[in-house]
Image (cartoon, rainbow, N blue to C red):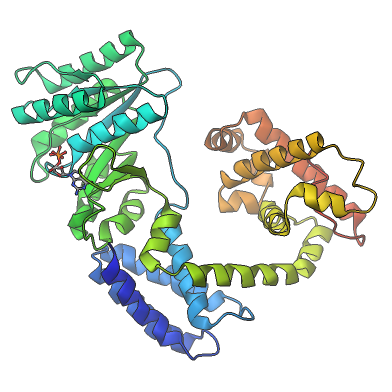
Length: 444
Ligand code: GDP
């Protein structure tokens, strides 16, 4: 998978080899190679343009890092942009507050929709969430049988009303049945056509309106490349999707679909299908996917390490920020990351003179737990919010979003923000004093 793309990108790195820094002059050729590599991988043109512009910005803005060659630094920038293009983190399947969670599967015929429905049911079962599969593809009688067979194979019930019933009705009754039986998630397999077809779209829209699903997952065949971009756009415009499942990633996909879906629809790929078997479904991780595309694990680690050293040199800048009370959540994350690189919180505390015996291991454990909670909340903030914690003090809806995104209560987020602000002014007051471990003192 992605071999051609990886090989092509090699050409881009080569353009920077032997240079002493990335410059306006030498980056153009490298960018041209990246552009060509992505187009050949069948990534949508618009997506490629935006991607290349973003990489150019970052590459020209990047500081020279000691011990890192320009080509290595460029690889890291392309990697980070790939991750961001694909959505940064894995987004799991939604879960309704009150069961059942309703998942509507959409997509063209032959993309692997029926198979993906069964795969998803099995995946949920492994997480102790039971499922009901609902067969609404009445146009291809074999489709119902196929789902029934798959259901038997994985021991998941299948709701069907034969090939004479109305698909909207089947979906509605299926959901009612799940509710009645106390089932956690209903997965509705729908009819596909070989091409986009207005009748199919209308039916899908009607089912969506009737059952009001928590997820509308577009099943996309990874082998279709450019096609996938158009398909995603049409389905998103006409139906409104919440995410995608990319199937047949075990084949020799050129990568285009994986890189286009998010940029086109703003919705994440949630799972990938990696084989015909029902077990062959994996959560989608942008980071892992980017690393697989580039196949450059060593270089990435090297650049990260070197950048951390630069971060340490950033300490002076940080001091300034503290004095001006401009210390933000980004700085906080950076500091905690540095701290983690030095070892566990316990290890660090013990190094502080006079601390060794004052903190119980229980307290330390709690501190580490709290740090994780804080980090998860910060990770749910947008970059803008991390830069301007004030945005959050004035917006309950932002706080709610963060709470939901990180699995906390709104009051936890409010407390984090007020603690953070208190800590910031305290740090400012301490002024010239040592920086110590910013962030730890303020959070109980
Ligand atoms: P539907 O028409 O969209 O419901 O598609 P199906 O679920 O019937 O799948 C069409 C074909 O693709 C079948 O032969 C599946 O076994 C195959 N298929 C589905 N998902 C994958 C996958 O992730 N990898 C591979 N290699 N084949 C798949």
